[in-house]
Image (cartoon, rainbow, N blue to C red; front, side, top):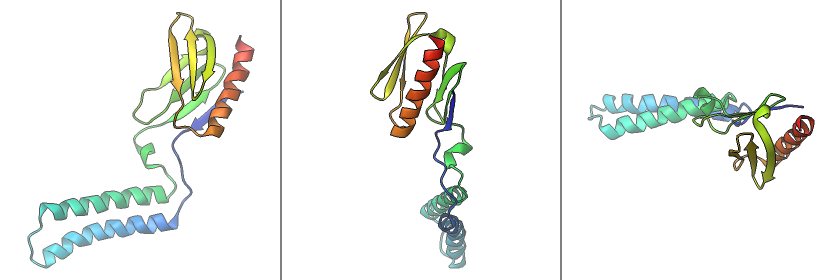
Length: 150
């Protein structure tokens, strides 16, 4: 038994978000063009407004196609198999990799696993931002593999 899940929320493609994103990108360009056409001074705040609308437009367009924006920066996943438990809770967080051969015991506490390694060190895997159903699935898979290993 094994479990592999991408922890980044991938939404359904949405035409509304795509239209909103493209509209924001167009608005950001029009903002500067209109200011230049009026012969008024383009201030720093105009550039900031335009940059923010451009950024939001790009983000909304990407997510409108069903791609999680944070997935452009890295991965967030959980992978539990016969070899190891690997969890990377966030895009900018470090992966926790615990081989089954290094595990002496596993104890489930509320929203976390306390893993005692063979070298007597304890490691805690916190699961605070995960769905209840996913936590139950993790418990089931870890329990199943632990029964086979110990």
